[in-house]
Length: 91
Image (cartoon, rainbow, N blue to C red; front, top):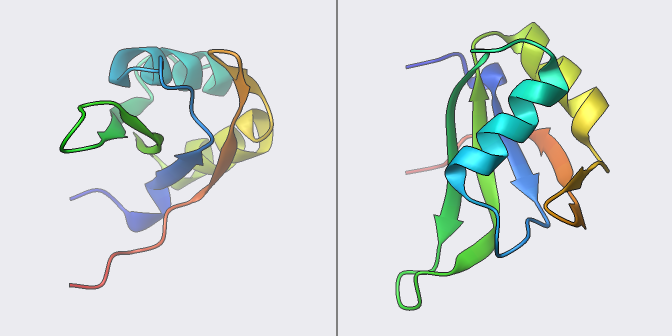
C-alpha cells in the first residue's frame, strides 16, 4: 500500500472525466510522466455515471503536494477542480 500522504481527493469533476483523462491531467500537472500510480473516478452504482469526485495516487508525497499546489482550481474537462489530501477512511 502506498503512503497515505500520496493520495489526493479531487472534487468538482465533470461527468465526462474518466480515470484515464484524470490521470493524464495530473501527470501533465505534476510534470513527471509515470508519477501517477492510480486514478479513480467514483461512479454511481445505479446509473454508472460519475459522482463528480475521484482520487489520484502519486508515487511520492512531494509530487502529491506539488500537484495540489498546481492543480487546485485548474480546469479539467471544463470544470475547476478542487484538490486536497485524501482523508483516511474509517472502517
